Amino acid sequence: MISIVIPIHNEEPSILPLYDRLTVVLERLHRPYEIIFIDDASTDRSFDLLANLVETDGRLKVIRLRRNFGQTPALQAGFDEAQGEIIISMDGDLQHDPEDIPALLEKVEQGWDIASGWRKNRIDNAITRKIPSRIANWLMAQASGVELHDFGTTFKAYRAEIIKDINLYGELHRFIPALARLYGARVVEVPIRNTPRAAGDSHYGLGRTFRVLYDILTIKFLLTYFTRPMHFFGSIGLLGTFLGGLIMLYLFIYKLLGNDLIADHGPLMMAGALLLLVGIMMFSTGLLGEMLMRTYFESQGRRIYAVREVRNRKETQSPESTR
Image 1 (tube, helix red, strand yellow):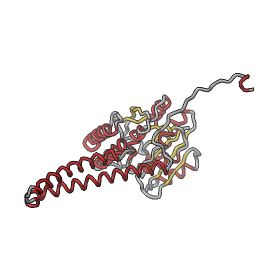
Image 2 (tube, rainbow, N blue to C red; image 1 turned 135 degrees about the vertical axis):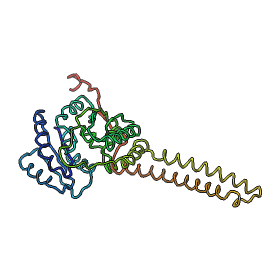
Image 3 (spheres, one colour; image 1 turned 120 degrees about the horizontal axis):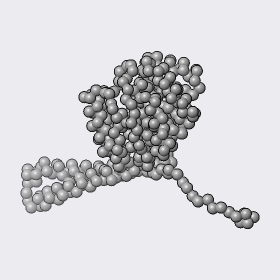
Image 4 (cartoon, one colour; image 1 turned 90 degrees about the horizontal axis):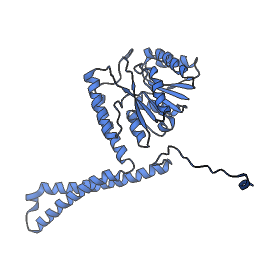
C-alpha cells in the first residue's frame, strides 16, 4: 500500500487539480493507496474543498490542525496517520509533478530506503532562491555526510519502517535523509520536474536561509554527538580547564615571587578564572547530557541501533528425528 502525505496551507486554487492528477497517476499503478491531506490551519476554503472530496473518495483522509504549526509538524501528523508500507510526501502547490511518483517508487522497490527528489533544473529566482539554496545544500551535505543536491524538496518516498522511527520537530523535515542515515538508511536521489507554481505565493523567502543555518548546526550536533554529548562538551571543558589552570599556575608562581599580581596581571587573572569556570561548566553540561540521553533511551525503550533484517538457516529435520 502507498500513502501520499500532503501538507497544505492556503492552497485553495491547487487542491482540485492536484487531486485529479494524483488519482490518475495512482490508479495506473494498480495497487492500494491512500491520500492524506494535512490542513495546517488554512484561512481560505482549502479545508472545505477537501471535506467535500472526502465524501466521495474513501481513500482520501483529511487532517485539520488546530493552528498553523508549520510544515514539519504537519508532515509528522501525516506520517503518524499513514498506513502504507511506502510513504510519499509532496507539496500541495502543484510544483511537484505527480507523474514523478512512479520514478520514486521504482527506487524504493529496488531496495533503497529513501528516494529523494532532486530539482535538477530549478525555475526559481536565481538571487533569492537558487544561489542561497545551493549554498545551503552544500553546507547540509558537509554537515550531514549525505551527498544530496536538494535537501529542501518535500517530494520524497520512504519505507514506512524508516520514517516511523524518526520524530520530527522544529524545521528538521529537510534533514530526514540525514536523520535516517543515523540508523543506516540507504538514500538515493531521483531527478524530478520543477514546475511553476500554479497560483498563490510561496510561503518561503530569503529570510528562511538564516533559519536553515541554525538547523545545520543542530543536525551536525545530533548526527555526531547525539549519543555521546560528553565528547563535545568534554573537549571544550578540557581545553578551558587546561588553559585556565595553566594561567592560574603562572599567576600563583608570579605572586609567590613577591610581585603585585592585581596591578600587573589583573585582566589575565580574570581570563584564567573565566576559563576554569567555563571548563567546569562544560564538563557538567556533558555529564548532564550523558544522563539525559541514558534516561531518554531507557524510558522510551528506544535502541541505539536499527536492524534492517534478521536471517537464519532453518535446519530441516528428518521424519525419524521428529518421532
